[in-house]
Image 1 (tube, helix red, strand yellow):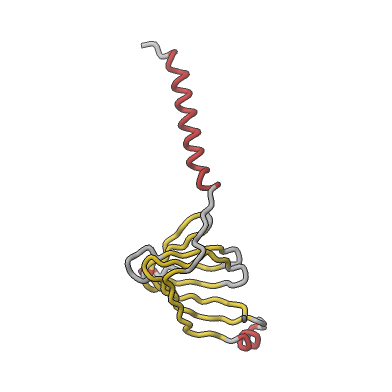
Image 2 (spheres, one colour; image 1 turned 135 degrees about the vertical axis):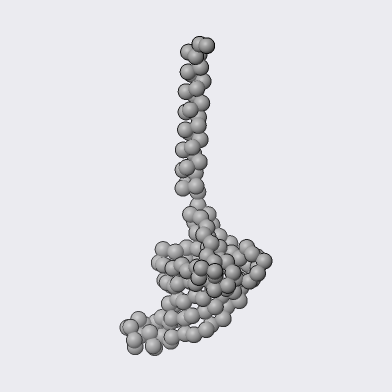
Length: 146
C-alpha cells in the first residue's frame, strides 16, 4: 500500500484538530458572562446589626455598619448582578443550593457542605436558585451608612 499520497491529508487533518482544540481551550477564556439586571423571588431578614457608632468605637471604622442577614431565594429566583467594591462580606448557604455567577463562570454552593464564599473588593457576581425548593444563606457584610 502506497502511503505517500496520504501524508498531506493526514497533516491537514492533524492541523485542523489542533486548531479546534486551541479554539475550544481558549474560547471560554475570551468570553465573559453577565448576570440578571433585577432581583426576583427574594426575602431578606435582618438578623443583627452593629451600628456605625459601635464600628467606630471598637475598630475606628467611621460611617459603616456590620450586619447579619438571612437571604432566601425562592425557586427560580435570582439576585441581580452587583459589585462588592465597597461592601465586603461572607456568605454561607444554610438551606438548598445557591448558584453564584461571575463573569468567568458559575459555581454551586450547597447547604449540605455549608458552602461559603467571600465577597471581596473585586467581586462582581449574581446568584440563582435553580431548584424546586427555597435556598437560604446567612450573609455577613460591612456596609456604608445611608
